[in-house]
Length: 314
Image (cartoon, rainbow, N blue to C red; front, side, top):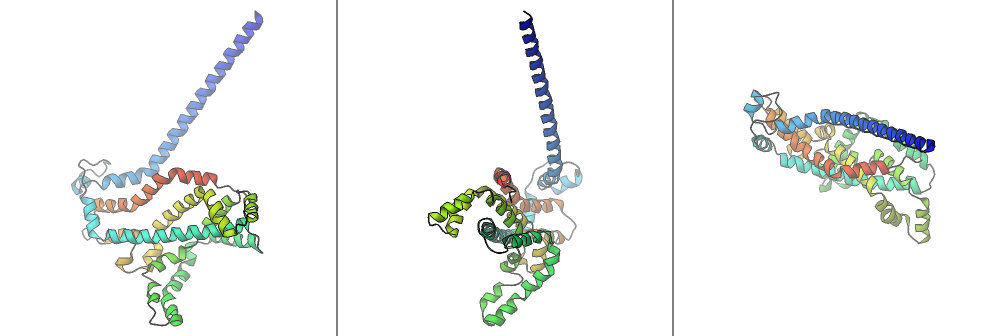
């Protein structure tokens, strides 16, 4: 009888401890979720205000400056912003610039990361550390040399090929080449993809060589398909960085037909002679944010997955 009573008491104590642990776990989870939700709302508050303000009328903005939700929804701000400056042209320029930068950064990063991961050559690690060290060099330090180099490219091209060469006109300032060439390679991309490539078994490379596959075939048929998550994550980072560029497009372009969307927003602000019209300005800002928001929402899971799969081996 005593044994049965002791067993019941132990079961009751165990159940009580389990319920207490679950209660503490739930409260900790709830507290964490509330904290993260609060931080997320604080971070997203400027975006939320910009979106709702873009649908307000001028009267509504002046009468209710502290109200987030509009009393009357309107699309007039978007019409005003779109017709005031050539937003369509700006979007095309930004799309071309970002697409070219992302394509070449991914291609160069894949090939460089493969070389630093699977190939053996003298000075491999030293060269990689040199590339990694370039991440600590601020863009402002290389800004003037890049600008001088790109600006002088047409003259140098004509001196080499001839003054009648039309291809030289597509180089230098106010060209897509000038907008993109300083950013076609990414040290961060090389580092990120190399760290993931190091997690792949070396036996894959040895097996491919035994089967007669060269390095190029092994890279594109085996390594790249296995690394889609990390490559996609880097592609998203590269696009966000390219799309949000401001200083370089501002300096390298002085023609309206070559301005990007970020520069277009700035000139749209200066063109308002009667003062700042917050409705059209917020509408323009929403147009600028829309591609990045769509990409983030669509590729959010792939982004997190790619970062989680990227190891820190080596």
